[in-house]
Length: 214
Image 1 (tube, rainbow, N blue to C red):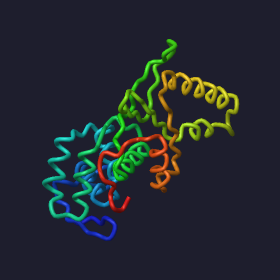
Image 2 (cartoon, rainbow, N blue to C red; image 1 turned 90 degrees about the vertical axis):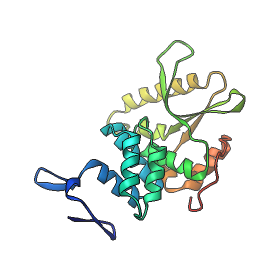
Image 3 (spheres, one colour; image 1 turned 180 degrees about the vertical axis):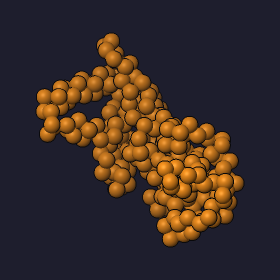
């Protein structure tokens, strides 16, 4: 069987195909391989993250499959790199893509979905990204938080106002002790340079060279 992926045609083995609702499709590991080979690294990372988070795919099995079946394929190096950096703690594609851009830009990779207790005894807060830096400094990264809050404004202004107040309280509590909260707009997905400026402004260190195409 032959299936199309962009401009390329890839031979698919019979054992890698299944039927569902009358449609013939590739199995999960093959689908992940095809997608991660075809996509830029940040989007490939989102695919690998999702495979691990939502489908329970283990890194070892995924790495072995990509290593065996991706050998010699265009984009195989991106697929291997995506599997290497994949993390099931990433909650959605946007968070994964932005983390992929951070990696391409050479910045330190943050911890994901860290739970931080309220210092005043309130609820435990979970943050998108967390960097623990030299000297005990901590920087929290939140992806497009205010945009999420404003999305309900047209249907429920009262609920939106309440959520904004709660978010202000949350941010005030998170900054107790000198922790910085970095707001990352979703627009950085189309503008790596914007993300780079934000990370530099918060003194996030670079741990490896920037990729040439980033």
